[in-house]
Amino acid sequence: MKILVTGGAGFIGSAVIRRAIADGHSVVNVDALTYAACLDNVASVADAPGYVFEHADIRDAAAISAILDKHQPDAIMHLAAESHVDRSIDGPAAFIDTNLTGTYVLLEAARAYWVGAGRPEHFRFHHISTDEVFGSLGKTGFFTEDSPYQPNSPYSASKAGSDHLVRAWRETYGLPVVLTNCSNNYGPYQFPEKLIPVVILSALAGKPIPIYGKGDNIRDWLHVDDHAEALLLVLEKGELGCGYNIGGENEMTNLDLVRMLCSILDRLKPGETPYADLITFVADRPGHDQRYAIDPTRIRTELNWRPSYTPETGLEQTVQWYLDNSAWLNALQARSGVGERLGVAK
Ligand SMILES: NC(=O)c1ccc[n+]([C@@H]2O[C@H](COP(=O)([O-])OP(=O)(O)OC[C@H]3O[C@@H](n4cnc5c(N)ncnc54)[C@H](O)[C@@H]3O)[C@@H](O)[C@H]2O)c1
Image (cartoon, rainbow, N blue to C red; front, top):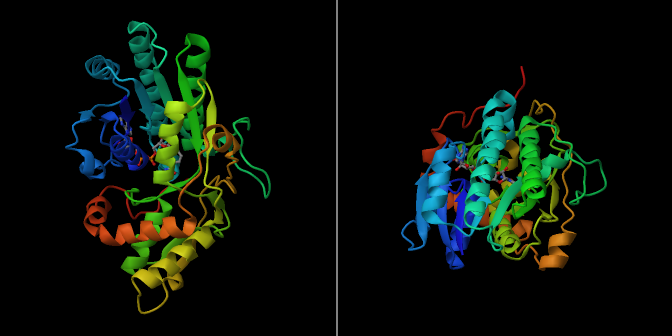
């Protein structure tokens, strides 16, 4: 299958591309190369015969239509987004522009392309979204595909809006869409402003490891390669018009996660004192959701998908990857905002 992937120079998009090429698909990677992008993330497949990169912005209707006409993809996997909650608090406009307007432009270009091709039955528009659209859980319960939308940050609100657009383009125009909402991802190539690379970087530099609030916020962690596998499965076998929640069933408080990363680092790269000594509590993020947890029953029972990593194996592999790839990390650390405290509302 020829898949057009938006946001393929980012963290999850690049994992999807590496996996898709390994599975024998062709890929057109469309990315605007924002601050969060790194083409090194796809260097391992850049010379593969089925891989093409197109430098374009999803908000540019003419450019996207020309790329669709030129490459004639069988499917679109839409991952391009502004993705960092803290940046959405400081500057929501970019999130509205890309996540809402960009998704609208892409949907319209996809619709024109699909109609122009005679509405082929096999075509799919796969929108990749987050569990954050469902808001915050209390101590019990799980997000299902039927959970109400209750986004709390500018990021999650913009993603929620994009989910609604995708649903409307299915209901109104019949566009063949599938939608997935996934929990927090971790793994190699994650931009060093997100929690896990921040912890590893701070620890290795001997700097305070920042934990927001009391560190008791709970997230359901999934390795990015497990997410990529699930996304390609949904693309190929998921029911049209359907949503699938994807999660690792690995709930952890942020504090427990950070302690686990510190103890892995103590083993893989021992310092003079335990890395956990560097843990420092800092002001909480405004509107910080307390708990996310996914009920993955649908994808498990309908598509027989299960994650392959446990938190132990996945986090150890991830820490080792960051230790082995300091050149990649150092290059991205120079980018604007990295290493700064963002998202403290004024
Ligand atoms: N990271 C997570 O834990 C997580 C979990 C669930 C869902 N998601 C969703 O998965 C998708 C990818 O997330 P990520 O963590 O890989 O993000 P990322 O920030 O690492 O990468 C985003 C990519 O999109 C590109 N991009 C941004 N604006 C663009 C535009 N206007 N036109 C074209 N390209 C543009 C960037 O250059 C970058 O390469 C997002 O839609 C996000 O909402 C992320």
